[in-house]
Length: 441
Image (cartoon, rainbow, N blue to C red; front, side):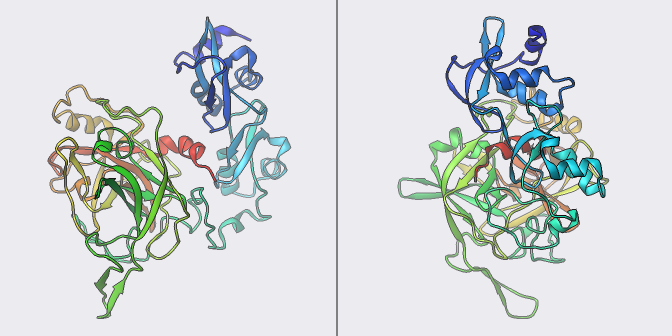
């Protein structure tokens, strides 16, 4: 093996003791050991050519150095686990060992099959490694012909009708006004408990029956001094009302929810690289695992995860939505939070990072702030900002009546909605590998 090449790949790493238990990027369990003693990692680094997935996997597997030799988190099995493009558990193997994907490679029927095959590429010790999961239907298009949505811990396929849909039509009220009662059914509110007090300080978005996506600053750092996250509210509309919420309908009657569902939190999982006191607030993303499966109703259903990085190739006149109860953290230390009793939303324009940087550097102590591809910006229009949403809540793109969570509310100006100062969001697409590797059945 070329140790010089290995040194280039593993230039930056965490430090673990040899023999210490560790977790691989795909969430498999392993042990930190010398690269020379790890057959799987040695085979990956010796592949010619290595894929982008291989390179990323190797970098994130690093756990220190033994002299000049890199150490890696070495898996317990020679076969790595993975998730297929439609979020089914699989194994990373040579494509010839996966009959249904090999058949697609030999004779792709259409663009959907070609895209599925491309997205199946995974990091593995064998050449031409793909994530081999359950066989696909005979006709690829049949995957989504039925809208039976299973209750699963894994996020739904964005191409299915099992995510990103709400029951509202033609009722968007822009500029930070009330939503329809059944709009954005994936919105979640996190309950924090301290002594006998319950606080609602952050939001999130349901991405599967078992997981809520939120910001890392909502589950780690100073906020925990104000309370411990205990429950997630789903299907909420009016936070001051107990039982079903009702609003007048166009027909002259009332449109009512089925009442808020209180889902106990089993585990909070901030991104491992998030640093609560970092100026740049990178990796501000987290998952909340619920103790029980969330029900699926007109008022509770998941949002889709994005298929592409819109920050890299934004559509023309790219406009996004932020929604929530306005529980934007203004000052954690002082305990100041903006709030609304009912669900609000607002549309905000996308702002590229270069223009955004000029705005956020106007923030207090913001002269040295930098942005990276794991962050994106929106807003900067007077009176329209994520204070109409929630810290940890979703930045959403309405793609042909199907919503995708392209961002997570991270930070912005203390006095929100200022002209020329956009809000900063975590770019969800950049963290899809971490999300998929972290979620467990």
